[in-house]
Length: 178
Image (cartoon, rainbow, N blue to C red):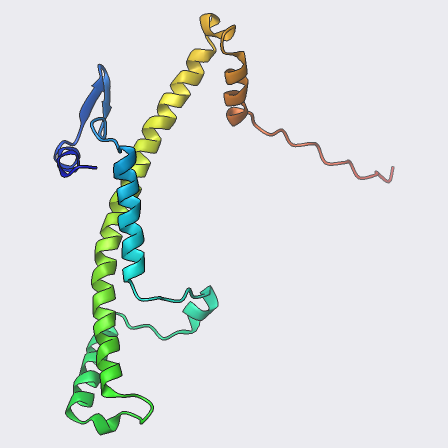
């Protein structure tokens, strides 16, 4: 997507796509090259990031967390270790502690930007999905008209399945003791 298209979409809250209809992304679309470029850029970002393991929910639960309240504690410990590296056990070097702290800061910065991008992507998907589903419901309603019934029987039947409610089978009656 070109920067002009992105800027246009970001600065224009609503764009007319046809009379009586408003849609916020009417002027935005991906060419095949832009989509491929976007995916390539995301894959490049993945390859740049250090190889990080995936954690199970149980592993996540068992780990101690460094949040905003404990950040000051970690900073003070790092400064203490810089002042007197001898306070660290021999299995941990000051260089490792410093490099891991910097990696944490760098990954947090990347996460902030990715989270913002993901939030915008989620919003765009919701808006576009809402529009497409709304138009699909309108098209489905139009297939029920007499003029469309003959031509669109197969498509109407496929769409009708979306709105078919499942009827519950009545539970077998227990044998009565009377």
